Image (cartoon, rainbow, N blue to C red; front, side):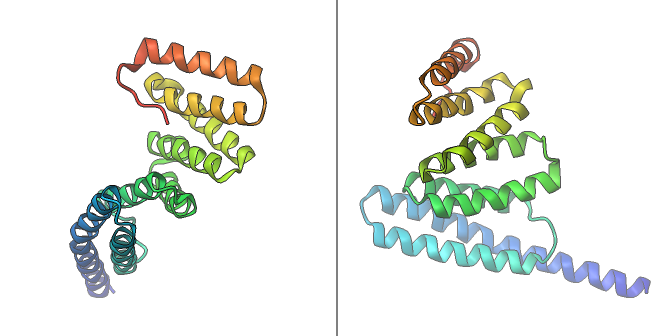
Length: 193
């Protein structure tokens, strides 16, 4: 039994090594897709993202049930950010939801990592038109980030924008004021969505 356990651990380590070997190429493809998109070549951009997604999927299958390494997370975040920037919010939502599940499992439901992804996921749902889901996610992000005031700025501002789009002016005004006060006190160069 002990020898089999060692063999199984070695197999898992080899799969993780192989999975990590795919990540630099996936990251390069995501970066290339961003450059192609900026240059106005959306077909080439989409093709690079498709290849990157296939590599990420292959890396995930190789890794098996193991929690992906940080480099995997970074590649997924880059992919989600690319989809957000290119207004492909359904694709971004899928990846942010995957990251949220991983972060909650790995770091806890109230972790900083989960709070950061919740804020992004809330913005994505706002862009998809699912305002009630956006409110719920952004409020959760705000709750988690209470001890990190600088990280409250963007989700508070975005929540205000959602309330404004829902014709709730008083609530939106209150939240815009809170975001502005946070920005003045803690912000500096913090960018709001």
